Length: 462
Image 1 (cartoon, rainbow, N blue to C red):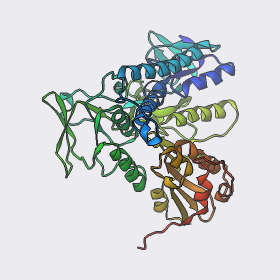
Image 2: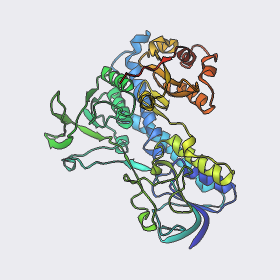
Image 3: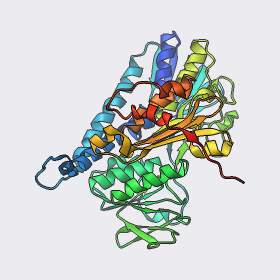
Image 4: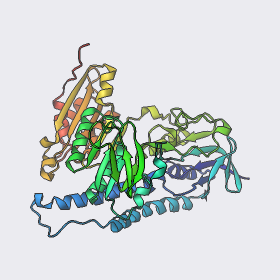
């Protein structure tokens, strides 16, 4: 047995950063990664997909060149092998950087093997058993594969295997209308594939407000993506060399024949094979590790960070998990998950940035509120760029005058939303931001104007 002050299982966004802090504090640590250093973000999530988003945007903008008075001779083509090579180069730089950083840490031993907990203080890794005073889990999540009729009859893709494509799908059928499905749908439509999105609910992005869902649907349909909603009984078959996706939609053909099928129906945590049940660690019905607001599990001395704890599911929440754990253990702070403000983005074009409460959530709370909206057609920067799709929306509490939440669907929305997020973290009244002078011409400069146009949120009389 080898003894360590701390063992970190998983090298995603939280694990390596925590390893660096613990190493700097003089602790003897072990970091275990069974597969790819960097986790989902680096290998199958943010970095590779946003690299593809950039390639798809370049193709889209080239096709629109005449809108800007630019002439391009000949047809715009996409070399999928070159696209993949660029994506691979970007992610490999990040992956190797994470691994190299870990291996350079003082007092840090890196294991590349599967880990399993034998007790609250023991970790089995390969043929060794490590003992530790503290154990940190950062094991991530993977694509959920639901049990759907006929799925065994076809070959299907997930967000991971999509990244290995070197040929352009003739017709990509995306099953799932969440963020992963929509991003891949637009990417491959812009590359040149025919694309159909199949979603079981009545609208895309069912966790967003209805006006956001409708606007995103319009954006995608304008690019030629077919969207089939209300597909309650999704099933599969193989016919004439195609993968058949059956639906229960009330309009359109009941079966959709595609050359490729992407399953984008949620995520599941990598907590199946860690021995958690044997040591009595609590998990919820979906397999996520139950943690308190300081990310401590039900087993004393073990923490869970990142996607596996079900408290965020984003790179930024995973990194913030590390900051919470490190702050509490090393800096004498009292940081809690509950203190962070929900923030997320959807990286279609135009992107969606959202912080805080949705309008639906505010309405369900019943609190007196103010609301402001502004179309992107009124944003000078958007007009100049020829990208005027979308709108801004903000909600404010009447009594405290603090911002409750906001959404920006439009060019630069994923960046501009941080003006509002930082104001919320500062606990400032909305009037501070409403009176701020922003630089022209930017997307952010319309946020003060948005806040100057607030109106009472109308509730229907019961």
